Structure formats: C-alpha cells, structure tokens
Amino acid sequence: MSDKPFLIVGAGFSGAVLARELAIAGYTVNVIDQRDHIAGNCHTQRDPSTGVMVHQYGPHIFNTSNQEVWDYINQFGKILPFINRVKASIDQGVFSLPINLHTINQFFDKKLTPSEAGTFVETLADLSISDPQNFEEQALRFMGRELYEAFFYGYTKKQWGVEPSELPASILKRLPIRFNYDDNYYNKKYQGIPEQGYSAIMGNILNHPNISVELGRTYTAQMAHAHAHVFYTGPIDQFFEYREGKLGYRTVYWEKEEGEGDLQGNAVINYPDEKVPYTRKHEHKHFAPWETHKKSVLFTEYSKETESGDIPYYPKRLEQDKQVLDKYIELAQQQNRVSFLGRLATYRYMDMEKVIAEALAFSRATVKAQKTGERLPTFPEIT
Image (cartoon, rainbow, N blue to C red; front, side, top):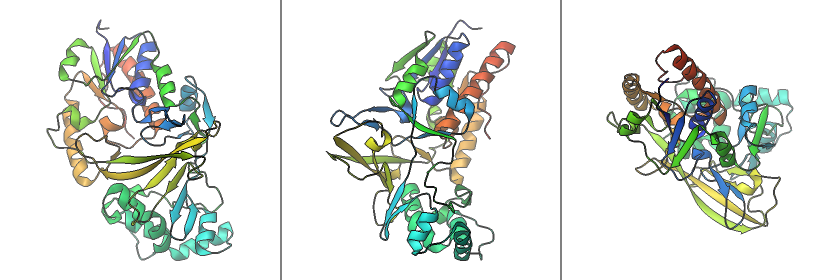
C-alpha cells in the first residue's frame, strides 16, 4: 500500500461515496472540488429571504428500488417521503403527468376505463411507422400526433435545442402512458427527500477522520504526483483539455421570484408549448411538505446550449458526441494512475441512485485491486 493518499476530484455523490468507502477500508483520501460547496448539483441551502430549502441546481427527488442504495443513504440522514406529482400547463388546461387515465379522459373529454383507454390510444398510434428512426417517429408510433404535440414536441425541442426528429428513438424506450389514475412521477419502491437537504447528507458521508475536503480547488495534472491515484468525476473532455473537442451538453438557468403564500400550488409544473420560452416552474416549499413557510420562492427554468462558464447538465450524446467520446475513452485507458467515475467523467445522464450504486461497486473493485496488486479500474462497469 502506498504511503501517499488518494485524490478524489469532485464532492458530489460519486466522489463522496467513493471517498467514504475508501476511508472505511483504511485509506487516506483527499477530496477537492472547484465549487465553494459540497454535493455538486444536488446542493441544497436555505433561501435567506423565505427560509425555504432550495435545490440550488434544480429539483432532486431521490427514488430507487435498490435496497442497498436506500439503506446506504439512510445511514447519513433522514429521508422523508415525497411523491412527485408533476403537472403540465397547455392551452387546453392543466393536466397530470406522466400521461395517465385522468390525462387521457380530461384531454379528450371522455370517461374511459383502463381497457377502453388502451384500445383508444392504439387507434391514435401511427401504425405506418414500423421501424421508428428517431424520437418523433417513436412517439408518433406510441401515441399518435395529438398527445405527442400537446405534451412532448415543444418540451423536447426546448429541452434539447433541436427538432425531436434529430434525437435518437432510444430516448423514448417505452410507452410513456399509464392506463390508470396513478400520477406518481416515479415508479420506484422508495421515494423521498432528505429532511435537512442533500448537502447535509453529503456532509455526513464525507465526515470521516481519513477524509479531508478542500473547496474552491481546481484539479491540475501536477496534483497526481502527490497522490497514489486520482479518481476524477469531472467532465472527461475538460480533463484532457478538450484536445479532441468539446462534448455537447445542454444546461439550464432560472429566473427567481418570491412572494407571499403559495405561488403555483405544486412542486413542478411543465410548460410543453413551444411558444412558451421556458420548460417548467418549480416551487421549492412543496418539496418539503413537512415544513411551513409564510413566503415562497419560485424558479422559472430555461434550457440552452452550454457555453464557456456554464455548468454542464444533460449530455446530448448525438452521433458526433459519441465519436468524440470514443477518442477520450481511448486516452483515458492510457492513464495508469487515473480513474474516471460519475456522470460527467463517463458522459452519461445518471439518476442519483445509479451514481451511488456505481460508486459503491467501484469502491469494492478498487479495494480488491489494491489488495491483489492489480491495476485499478479505469472506468466503472457500464451497463
């Protein structure tokens, strides 16, 4: 075992969980993050004016059916139940999402049973599309034009900045319609939000005598010399100084407003209409229904292309991006003392549960490799 500590770049879930597990295994770990806070895009803090716990980089609802992940995160803070019931505001009214039996009956002014609704939606589907080649064709094949244009076309175009016909069909993997009145946005066994916010959870994960955390510190290649191994969770193209080009991301920004009482009556309301410039509004007091606040804070969310200085959110993963990514993966495989982990370092969209599960598995593989003298894994086992 080297006398040098490990270095983990990034104090989000990937870095924090890996740091904790390596520390428990007896290793010394230094964690750095270029931001002035831990928890990455899950960072939460109290709004100074209203007292509302705000998800600083957009809403995060923890949801999983993975028992190991659920048990793990509950070691570090109390997760209170929260069901995300998203609404969609269009010209015809306010509807429930995901599209469910209530949405269908309301939208088409009908009183269908589940079986009748299933048959009805089949009549809407564009069966002339036998082999969907893109997102739009997949959606039309699933649900027909009326539902697609009302709830998917404009929102998708605003979210990704391209016509849905330019996006791969794989984005819409299954029929996004429920033929019952279930308006629970997620279909997972466990769903909730930390009572004291995600940053408190992350602080507890990182609270170990073998872990040191330094914020406001940007990684440089020279840091590797003082450490036994580097675990990098930042953007992989940034690590290689963009020598093969930049990977495409969408980012988001918000307009904030405060007011008395209740500003929209729900945690999240989507605005699918293409003519509306924003994608959704979220009112953060509703993410903590166990709290009471006289004032409220509402964020209107916009999507745009990522530019210099922006935080990358959603990997576009278009064909040209995948070609660039392959080049970075080849460069990464040539690194002997650096491993890449997490959504940015592997250029994937990942829910929190997947990030935690992967970090736990990666930590076990790392400890095993250290004990056997094998080379540490460069990437997690991506499925």
